[in-house]
Length: 299
Image (cartoon, rainbow, N blue to C red):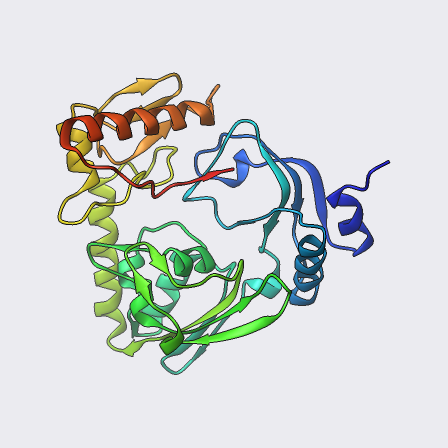
């Protein structure tokens, strides 16, 4: 009988679950199952997992908070890894330098640094993400992004080796960071000391702005598409007459056209994909613009 990924993970004493539903781990709340969901306890276990999967050519997927992720209804083969153990969720403030594990909640970090009188992460207010996911996609928006404050990032390569990337080794662009390694272990931010009250007020203002202009209470994964150069994806989708457009359980939000929401009751990930494909086709036909997805779709 062929050995499964779960078999070698159990032998390595790495906590794992076969056939784990992934919908509950995403903000959409819908989607298929993982062949195996693994939750290593620390970096040494993660290194063993990475090496074992690499040697066996087993696909590996990294799951953060699931805020920017849609899992197709057919599910995911291979090993899905979630770094939510305590070893990956630590935060250390040393003067203006803040070192945070990849599994730490981004919004919690924004609030903690603001309370400590450290400025630089206010732009991330209202963005649901883990620190690892936020760094990898250079989370941000009109108010700035997290990449501008990153001093260094520790990653783990496909060979299970921990490597430190300094600021000069990295480049950050729109929803992109030059990090090829599959796992981010932690990141160090270099922040600016300031008045805690003023920084917290800025956080509240940015959060209030986003709450008023985005369907933050709906089941979605944030902006579905990246903004094309010199324009906004939401404006193009709205101008194409697609606000409120619906396929099955998925709908283009009437509040903000770059958000696709889904009804969890009987919701289907494939409905969301179908709406994305319709948007891409309609905007391309109407404006000649090829939208690029910001939401990650597995597989």
